Length: 116
Image 1: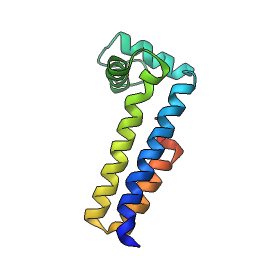
Image 2 (image 1 turned 90 degrees about the horizontal axis):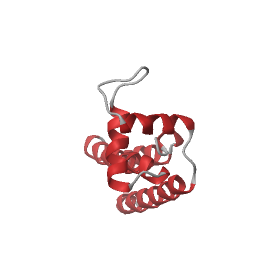
Image 3 (image 1 turned 180 degrees about the vertical axis):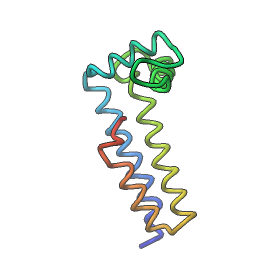
Image 4 (image 1 turned 120 degrees about the vertical axis):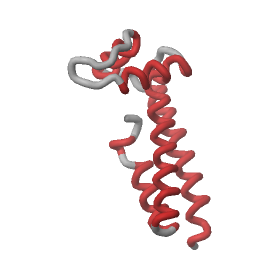
């Protein structure tokens, strides 16, 4: 059973990422995202209520994927998948495969990280 956990994690992570990418491509940009997109068009070292990282991330994402709802959010979804993979590999090295599977699944399927 444990031997199948790692391939299962990677398949589920890929499927969850595809669902997230479909979701961000088919939904409209909300007010906060539009505000952050405006920041990304006028980069600065800080903004009235946030630091510069969100603006830099959206600038990079729209440079890669275009100025659309998909482009604004795509890089965050991909980084979320990368962080889930990192969580899985770190737990696997630190604890065991079962703990890694649980941590990776919880991270990749939690709505808090759905496309943050």
